[in-house]
Image (cartoon, rainbow, N blue to C red; front, top):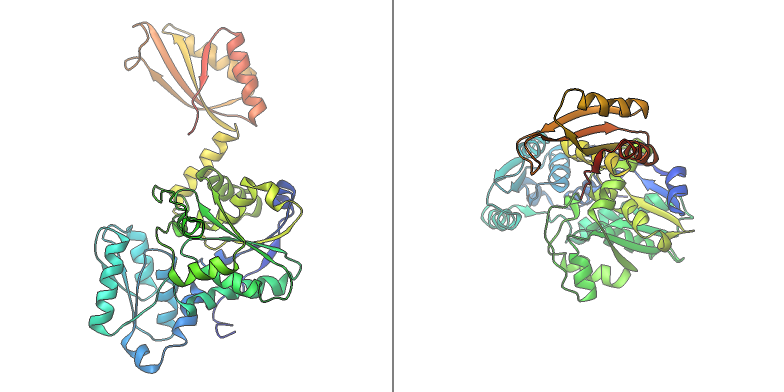
Length: 391
């Protein structure tokens, strides 16, 4: 391989717990262990290594606020090639500083990615830079395909590859490798429900592509021209996953595998959780394609997962505004062995009479059954109680 030795040969490891959970034999490819924490280095490096001296001296340019920017910047600097990355004006500061830290010249331009992309193409023409597309380039596709070469070398018995799908660069490379193996290997793409762009392109549908998705790395409104043709020819199916499944997958990977993945990186596991009947009994390989997730966002995902599983809850209880009212409620929590984390009183902004009181109590339980027992005990004591549910 052209890029061998310059990128991490990440491990492909079985997850016994996730296999038991999904009914498939699940192998994980830990691309979140690359230096820039994403597979994008592979395609960027493969492209850089094929530039002639004239192109190298003038430098490369890309439009990206994500993993492609960091992968390209890191390897360009390592090879002594100047790099310019155009990002939208409101790109989070951490992404700008990380990319600059890899040696790139960052140009902030426009309100949207489309604005940044158009400006990058303009600078390409004016300055003679080589534009490196994040996915719609055969050299990039070939570089991403090395993920599958490694997976199938490490685990030859894999019969199904489940691949996060945005612009299509990763799945195009993986599908090209898989279909050249001389044996049947199924290739399934996974898109976020909010951004089914390749699904629309292949199936002739017109589902909306918009919204705030956890899987921002695959939130692509327009898939590539080259990649769409490869997907049409080689990919067996595309499935869509909800935000809730993506959150669950991120949380499970941290809890079970002790590994941090971004939303896009969790899409393969999200598909196994959302469509177990499709993968049951198969030997599945999926790519944890990136690990760049904001720490506050990760904290929110983990807390929401605790809430959905019943281990963290907020109960809304109607009390009478009199001495000892809160003590008597807290006594029930104590009797049930439930830890109280926060208490919120509401006397003013309520439809209750002036002597009425709403109290929200945030608490920690062992599991859903434990929470149900607490709620039953409160109702047995004649309290009006409700669970504040997540969306």
